[in-house]
Image 1: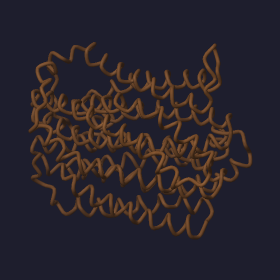
Image 2: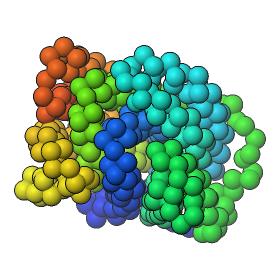
Image 3: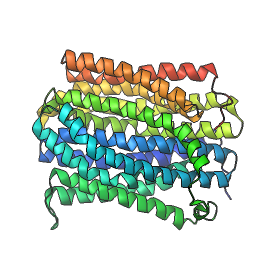
Image 4: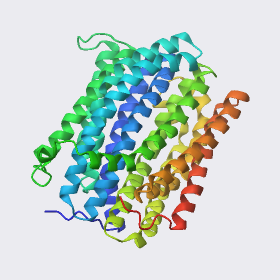
Length: 446
């Protein structure tokens, strides 16, 4: 039986982070392909895809907030070598995710027409967005189940299984995108709606793959999930105490990005289309950083479960350095060939030239993000999620003030609009670093 407590060498950090990086990178191929398909449909579809993508990301991040809170608990139990506690937390997490997903589906079907109708200036953008989301939301329960299972694998140090699910999701999505958007191989030509249908089916494939990894590797022997099918009220309340601030935190974080895209939509089709391409670039750059941040979250919680709180600051610093090194290398390559990288998403020369200055702004902000995201996830790993929420609200508030002034009031150039990321990540590193250095998180029990 494998030991669940972690070591903190660079080798162990990379061993946990690398599969997560690959699992995050593979879906970026899907986003990349999706952008290409949308670009072929038209600049409007490419831009609207950005709005709907960010809105669905909010729903996804609510699920991620729940799974992150449960992951903190499971990682803490792993540090204690408590397999029974891990199994109970996993099963209650799955039941909570089912309730959350069904509630979110109902809210979405009611809220989306009101929200998009109020926020979007173009009627065609509104119609495309609403129809897309009404199809896309049916994949939400499968997505949230998968997030909980992924959190389980990460917490016990089996992050390599995430790769298999990502491959299944991406291959299914890209294949169905091609056939359903353009009506290839005898499939119906659904156009923009084809992307929503293919993504929903891909999320089902992802979920089936992750369940297959659990059953196929006979993990039910060490983690007998069938013994804990009964809903445990106390476990659920404890999970929600940890997860609720994270859920609200992610809602604020991605909600700020949705406001950003709503404001950008008022600047015109080119600004919206360019921003969707930049969102894809942002995702590719951040893959390694987010994987290391997730690793930091898990390791910090595991160390505290082992009673080694005095090792937390050293592991946060070590992972931050690795994240910064990775980001410098990636940003340097992109900075040398900006036109070539943007050209992978679109063949429209005017749109590429329009977007290049904004790409440079993103490269600058991601250097700060590489450290701030790790530090912030170090705070998350301590289990004091109310502090995370306070930090997030402060950073998003500063971000939105910048967006309101620069985009809405001044109608500034797109590159200045994207400098909002610099404001957010700089605020995040200052506040997260201050809290970690304070030591107030030591002794936190979850």
